[in-house]
Length: 629
Image (cartoon, rainbow, N blue to C red; front, side, top):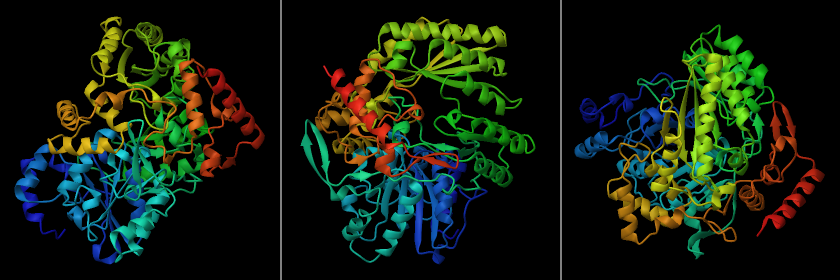
């Protein structure tokens, strides 16, 4: 590294906690001569290094861009307050990990948005990187600022800070943005942005005006249809991974075996915006697993998706990876446990080894009635049987994950949650003995855009905590009940369904000193409330119920799932109506039609038959009429 900041940067490192977060030089890092490329790209995860390096999505894009000889992609992360203070005190900008280059000297800086609680860090990175925070203040020589990820499906709170958003799957759109920006070098910045807006899946906020409707700022302009990878078997997936110097949140190999979900949980944004479902074949997964295990030496591997047990080849895939990679290479293979059914648990138990500890199940709601509301079609007996299966499979404990503040929720639902927890412990101990334990985690619902719950009010503050305490007080004391911070959920809720005024609030709060909202030790809700009071902005409105008959700030972003479908699902929710998995029959969400991508099961692609789709659409329309008050 020949950075002019190298000497002073080395002097700073001993003065901060965990200097390994900032040094770079890890195994797997790509090293190139910056002078040999036509585009220098910096990917940023706007959280601390130990969180950011665990994000497999940015690892995919990092290696994808570096496959090109004309591009050098480097990395940067948000910094802790002690490092920020040192950088400012010594006049050192935020630097990339690979070459310690200031962010302002890159051609493109791209952010991965996985949580609204990292938005405050986006501003920190721009500020420390020497880049004007506001897009409108950037000049021709400044880098292009882009962002993508699940949070980009409501881009409005970051619209004044980001030049262009990539909506949907990032593998193709990020390459198109890189090429267009490079090819338009020398043109005025405004004209370059106009060229970016012609890319499928690219949203350029500066080209959209806004009007106020029903109290919200609504962008005016063409709808942006998300970008979808059509064939996951052909999609790029790296066979190398960056190996950190320091401990990270997830020290493991993650292999994406399936994209999309057919379960239709009404609270789940990821399940809605990633449709239609696309699977990798077991053979392709095994090929990737072999290469990653051989190239990295990491001893933990996860077969990742929103619902891995739903993969059509789940059993042969899991068995093959266990037998041909896990055992001979001494790699512990696991599956993320989400849906609380016995098959999911048995499948997870099959691929684990003697290091089995606990397993996480997500019933989400505490009563059968409330699970009908959220369309999580599991009965209490299903959950108890799954716990019993976990104990039988050798797991020492089960963590049950629930949400509080769900639509139509009552105190009786919370009491039934406590009863379910107690019954699960008893069932597990019948098989696993007295040492088998139950852990419980409860988090407040944060309604998300492009879901049936996007119209729902969000419960926060004292009433949310009262419901959590109701569960805790009715649960045996020996069972540990934990819960997510209510303040975190409040900030997340403001930004998840915010308009451009939420961006004004974000900027004001940043200047008051807010940082690292996803870390409870740093979160300052009082700064958000103080900034909102100064602006005359009503936080309760951002958390409140939305009018189902009016446009919402994110409706210019087309996630593939129609508003009619989401509206129909919201009405079914409040009437406790369940719909089955869309593999069992098309529900007319229209994701396949809008995106032009067919469902993919292994190497077989399937489009819903036209007549069943039309019948489903007509049923949906009739149900909506009958459910409307």
